[in-house]
Every structure is written in structure tokens, then in C-alpha cells.
Image 1: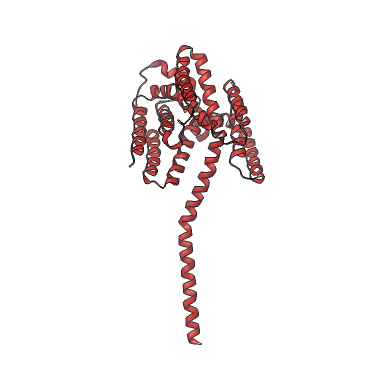
Image 2: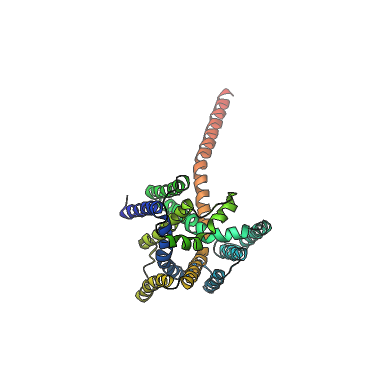
Amino acid sequence: MRGNDAIHLGLMLLAFAASYLVPFELLLLAYVVLGPAHYFTEISWLHDRSYYLPHRGIAAVLAIIAVIAALIDNASWFGLAMWGALVVCAMLAATTSAIESMLLFMVAIALSAIMYSSGSSLAVIGTLIPTLIHVSLFTLVFMVLGAHRSGSRVQAALVVVYVLAVATILLLPPTAEIRISSFARVGQDYFGNVGPALGRLFGVPGLVLDARLTSLLAFVYTYHYLNWFIKADVIRWTEVPKARLAAMAAASPASTALYFYDYAFGFTFLLALSLIHILLEFPLDSLALRQFGAAMQGVVRARYAGPIAASATRSRSTGTKAAKRATRSR
């Protein structure tokens, strides 16, 4: 195991253990303290790569949509903004032809109609895209892609450990109690709608932000942030002008301090900053999903191409032997 992989595993296990011991406190501290540092550094990294968009000006539009979305009170309209931004980014970054873009658009329109007709589906997707889908599903996709490209069994094992950690939290939830009561209220403000959204998605009525769901969110959020920071030597997000790095180093704790100084304004600011980084990452997420699908297709082909080729070889061999026998008999 390489040193970086060992640190990677250690941080994952640390996040898992802390999510059991202090889930409520960990969730808030991770979001408020680690979050801003992640947002600023990733936006900087995406900026140097033109946000994986054909034109950087589109990124400015996405940032404006994110700020407006942070001020939207209607869950369905918020969901429409998130879903629409994701679809547009997928069309711009993950399609390679006009036909693919048109097909994706038609599928998106059909799905949008289904969600609109079911009433609360837009609200559900709007809740889950910037939370569990972003911090857990896409994180898992990037982990699988990294393991596949490197061919590393250790990285594949990290994927397994991550999935097992999530399954363990769901099947064996922690019994930890809230040590700082004010954290429960703040956690409810930030993530209280995740429980009902998951309940509507999976048909589980009465699902709320309990210890199980809080522990899950605490783990996936904390690991999501730590996973970004530990990849500095891989994706080189620290290789930026020193002035920009210093600005990010100052802006991150300032954002956290702003939250503790004025809760209402800090809450809105961090929400808007979080949504900006999420929407700006949508093109990369869409591209990663396409690459993930191609990788899985390649794995399936490699798995079944061998037996099919061997079967064809045996058939040709059998046919050749039969022809030789027929020739000798004549």
C-alpha cells in the first residue's frame, strides 16, 4: 500500500468513527469549517480548466443561478433549477454530437414531465442533488473511475470500504446523543429536508433527520471534503498563483467566522457558496458519468469477449477437424 493510500484509508476510517461518536457535531463542523476551504479550492481548480465547458461565460450564468436558487423558498422551483442546470451541463460537457445532445434533451424533458406530474418529485430531486447525490454518489463514481484507470487493487479496496461504511451506518445506526443542543437546530435548518425527501423517494413515510441519517450525512460530507484535500498531489489543485492561494486561505476561515458572527447571513452565504461550487462542478460530474458508463461497458465486454472468442475458436477448430475427416473419407 502506498503512503497516500494508507493516509486515504486512515482518513476514511477516522470519518467513519467520528460519524458514530459525534454525528451531529461532526456534520455541522465539517460543513461549516471544511466546506468553505473545499468550495474555494475546487472553484479555483475548475476555473483553470474552464469548468469543462465550451465557454467560461456559461460558468458565470451557473453561478448566478446558484445564488438565485439559494434564495428560493419553493422546493419545487429550487428542484427545477438544480435539475435544469444539471441537464444543460450534461448536454454541454458529456455529449459529443448534436444527435446525442438532442436525445439527452428529449429524455430530460420526458423525465421532467414525469416528475412534474408526480407533484413532489422536483422537490425531492432538488433536495438530493446538492446533498447525497453530490457528496456521495458522485464521490463514489470518481473513486471507481480512479481505481479503474490506475488498475490499483488498493484503490478498489478503498471503494469497497467506503460502500461497507455506508451500509454499516444504515444497518447498524449509532446511538450517540446530541452533546451540543444548538447543533441539532442548525443541522435541522441545513439538512432537515433530506429525510422527508428520501422517504418520498423510497416510500418510507415519517423519515426524519435522526441519528442514522445524521451519521450517514456526517460521514459522506466529511469524507467528501477530506477526499478532495488528500488528492492535492494527484489533481494538483494547489498549483495556483501564490496570491490566489493566499486569498483562498484567508477567505475560507473568514467564511466560517461569518457564519458564527451572524448565523442568518452566514447560513445564506455558505448555502450560496456551496451551490455555486456544486453547479460549477456539474459539467465535470456529467463527464465522469459518461466515462463511468464507458468504463463499465469495457469491463463487461472484456469479461464476455474472452469466452465468446474461445467458443468461436473451438467451433472453428471443430469444423476444421470435421472437414479433415470428411476429406480423408472421400
